[in-house]
Image (tube, protein in one colour):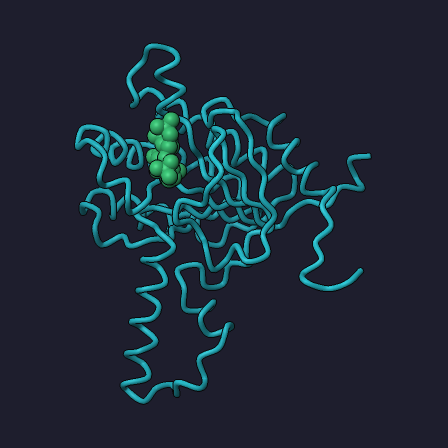
Length: 237
Ligand code: IPE
Ligand code: IPE
Ligand code: MG
């Protein structure tokens, strides 16, 4: 009975396998990223239809700068094109877009496109789409520690006041509830520096499906698996 399912409020996805998807088809890696963008578009609407309120997607890690320049350039181009192309429909559907990560490393063009879509879709109440771009968990924690240390040095906070709540509300993800379910595609079983603080009590779902092949059926399988889990949070039930 579909109605009895427990829908995760926040799903985070490590969208992996674009390169292998392309290789399997004798295509260039960039074509895998284009197909991955289409999978993302589907997943946004599928997740929103399922009742998910926050969808966070790992789109570009701090480590991904180390890929060949041609691939990095193509990914940046895809980010710009993608946000420009999808902004009207996202707004129409009530999807608000937010980014996490250090945007200062992006070109003015990419930063501008991201700033525009965040402002344009602000207030959308159907679902929040969180794009993790130039994101890594460790760099997020470093940035947060530096900010809190500065505040302490300036006398704005006391060291003893730093608690879990203050750290959570100082991370890039401030105001976003922790992910309930983290999905990773392409048969890899690692976090790759994604949401390490926020994932403390997340449920994990791994699938061999490559990201460009991810569809509603796969999303429903992940939600079904989540729904069958018993989240105990360290307690006895
Ligand atoms: C994920 O697919 C997309 C990004 C990291 C940008 P990959 O590009 O990592 O694909 P594989 O892992 O090489 O197949
Ligand atoms: C993680 O995928 C980052 C994104 C999905 C954006 P990677 O393909 O970069 O991670 P590793 O190298 O397999 O750990
Ligand atoms: Mg990969």
